Structure formats: C-alpha cells, structure tokens
Length: 249
Image (cartoon, rainbow, N blue to C red):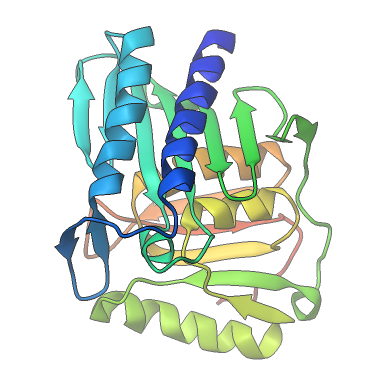
C-alpha cells in the first residue's frame, strides 16, 4: 500500500506542476460544449499520470475522464480525473485539482487529491486516517443546518437542473451559505477537512468522487451514492459530516 500511495502522490504532483505552469496561459481547446470545455491539458495531464502509474505498475488498469489504458482485466484499477474543475481552470479561477484513486477488486483502497495552486495534498489509504499535507483531518461537528455551509452542485442538463435546483433553493434559505464551486473532488476534500458541512449533487462521474468519498468516510463523515435514474454511468452523491440534518426529504 505504501508503494501505491507513493506513486499516486508522485503522479499527482507531476500533473500539478504541469497545470500550475500552464495556469493563466492561452490554452488549446479540444472541444467546446454548451456547458463544458475539454482542454488539451486534460489529455496531457492524464497521459502524464498514466505514464507514471503504468511504469510502476504495468499490469494495472487506468480508468479516467480521458479514456482507459493498461490491462483492463487487472484487479487493480486506477481512477483518474486529470483536471477536476476544467472550466474554472480555463477561465483562470484557481479552484481545481487532480484526483487519483485506486480500486482493488471493486473496493476503493487509496485516494489522493491535489490542489496545485494552494499546494494542498489530501491522501487516504484503506484503514488509515484522512490527511491534509500529512496532518490528520476530520469533518465538522456542526449539527444545525442554519450553521452550515454547503456545496450543492448540478450539471446544466435539463434533468440535472430539474433535480438540483429545487435542492439548492431549499438549502439556500435554510443553511448559513450555499456554494457552487465547480470541483466535486475539492468539495469532498473540503467536507473531509471540515470546511464544508455537506456536498450534494445528483449527477457526477466516478472519477469525480472516488478519492473524495474515501476521504470523507475516513475523516468521520458519511457519503451516500446511488446510480442516476436516467444515466446509469452517472451517480448521485450526498456527503456530509454525519451529524447534520439536511432536511432534504
């Protein structure tokens, strides 16, 4: 496990250098979508991460936002988001991260999230504590929704808006503050660190949340996921400190 974690951190930091060095510069756009952007740097970041992981573990599988690589029959599968918060990154908003998780025979055993702009590295291994820059972290103790700061995310598809907007409208009048921050992995890292009390979203990808879910649970919170009703490759997620009553129902 130590070698897995060491290589995951090495890969995340290498990608972090790439992203930090190119932050604020003109960027090559591979695809413009109505509500998303695909950058050449997404591909380059994943290729860099993939190269480091497969050099160390050539028989492992890679499953990432920018495609798959390696031995897809392997019981070890690395789950990679090379830039979580690409739109933020493209617009010069310094709130994005690299997320790397390792799954063994279907069970998450390791997670790493790096915010290269703030030099914040979160890490967790199966059975171990959640750490931020080497120091243990834990979720908040706030139990009252009126005291809470929440992140409520939703994509801009009609289905996601129809699901997410009512939750946001309900929370924004009851919680102290609601945020839409643009990076699911950092939202989860912030819940694990006690900065946010909860993060709710109806449609995310596995690579967005794989590492962060482990962090929240290791930091004492709870994280509930379920397949999206209309998109089986998407997940809904509710991550919180385990004591707050979100009053969603």
